[in-house]
Image (tube, rainbow, N blue to C red; front, side, top):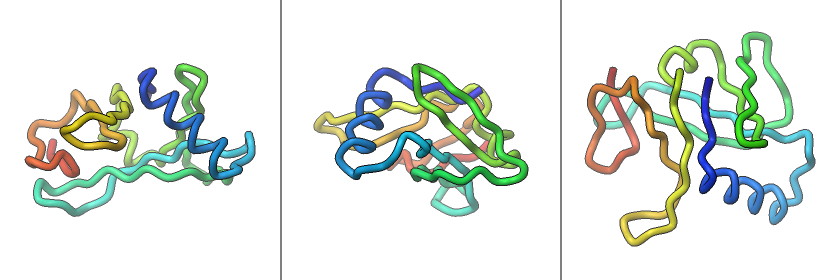
Length: 108
C-alpha cells in the first residue's frame, strides 16, 4: 500500500482543481535510478493505467505505481510540506536505508 497524508491530499485536490484535471486523473508515483543516493522518486498526474500498475486508494486519493516501483514504495506515505525548509511533496519511506541531504533520492 502507498498511503496519502492529509497535507498531500489537500495539495493534490488543489492541483486537480487549478490545472483543470478530470476526476479520471490519479497520482502516479515511481522510482527510477538516479540522484546522489541511487534512486529517485517521481510524482506525476496521469489518467491512463498500464498493464502491471498497482492501484491504491487512501484518504480519498487514487495512487498508482508500476510493480517494480512498488517494491521500493511499499508502506510509504506521501506528504506535502509548505514550510521554510522546502515546499513540495516528499515521501516517508520506511524501506529507505539512506537518503541524500536534499531528500530527493534514497537507497535501500
